[in-house]
Image (cartoon, rainbow over all chains, first blue to last red; front, top):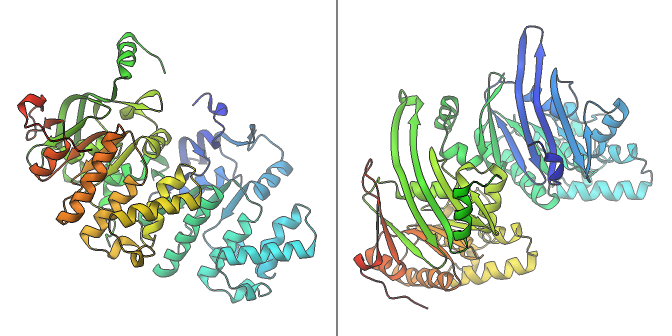
Length: 262
Length: 261
């Protein structure tokens, strides 16, 4: 992977990433690349270090060791090597983060339309007509009734909040989307609808996605590749079908054997 | 990729073959059952040229389906090489990185599995269009081609908008076949492609396979019916029960099939 910069399809590259706390280790020895249009699923039990890894990859937690690089239009940026201001800009325009609890990822005191427009306004777009039109387009895309544009998110259901969070993050057309347990707490039919939406958006926008899920079934539906994490290490990685059909590590075999078949 | 002497000569010959399996071995280690090791096949060797069609034969459990899955990169080999001519490059599937296997599946290898594994709620038409869309073909053209093959395989229009998860076995298998034959692949892996089909549909599938061969596709297939097999193959690869080395028979030792098309 030394000449990874020559591969324009690579969006994110991390090497020897680790995060330690005092005497403990959240995760270590993480190295991989994500390409344009690729969905990477990180699975494993609670406490395996998945969310911490996600936070380091998405610029919100400084790792103890290792590097994270982003590539855009041939320019490579070291995520923690650039200044705070540039990193925030990157987070606003190139990267989207959909957190597990949508109430933490949205502004509950402003309208749905306002939530969607916020990143655009931060980028200097001030024309009310443009902002409103864009917000309406996105509400339609994520299948929220357009009449709710002026409603506060406090009146939305769990599924709607997640979809609003997705719209809020994708409005600036980022190349990379991070999802942390996107379907947690949603019932099965709502979950299904959300996954279908994500799949469509990935295809239409050629999005790269890094998704954390403790639920193998969820990861399976969206992911091209899976990383299996246990106690802070990636114990196995491969194409989704390889991991599900030919699991090699004992923990992966356990995970695969335990999943409920429809 | 470094080329040693052995692989240079391989490369020279490569123009004439599309797939070369060398010393291929596969086993499973079941950790949940106290590290039981199951050897599926060991030290397989064969070469496949464009236009050739191999039929895998052997008793149930001999590893026929597994061999197809290893070639497709679904199962990971324990040892050996799977040399493939992919876009004028020689790639060893056994050691290829994930993104390269995805590329190979997109452009070079078409795999008809024994059972359709569909993601829930994705409509049949979308499933069949997908391989073309992945190749960058425009929506309209992809749709036309998908419709054409679905019509040819007799899947009625009222089903196109539905997910095949509720279809009958035969219908699912025809969607599975449509999904592969909607595009052209230099190498086809077919696992019991006509198993759940009635005679009329079986003949249509045989036609599709024959047409693919005429266009130069190479095929490795498992056919549950000898008469079907004899209509398609040029060579037999016999996989014996676990532990025994396979035997690759010459055409003279096999009843030569009538070539169609």
